Length: 106
Ligand code: FES
Image (cartoon, rainbow, N blue to C red):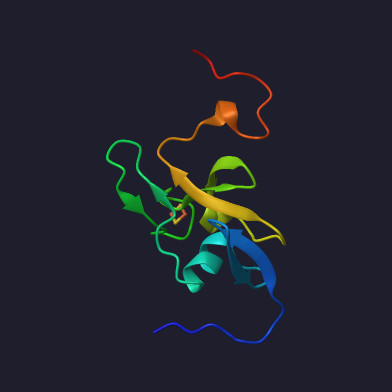
């Protein structure tokens, strides 16, 4: 159905600690899907698995944590060398991500 060019430079990122070879210009979602990863997050209430649906920033089913920052849209984020991407589990905990500067409101 779809094919991907095989030539071109490779950009190394990780997903759940596993190496993923992306291409320059790839979105994180495109790179992960091309590597065979379909589940990017689970829902806050039921824990149901979710993966990219719209690939244009509308559905938010592609949310992942990138370099310690939660709730990033994988379909709207271009890969950079060394990115560490992990699944988003439930609702984002902004108060405890690596870049947080103040506590979340009570
Ligand atoms: S796939 Fe729909 S917002 Fe990213």
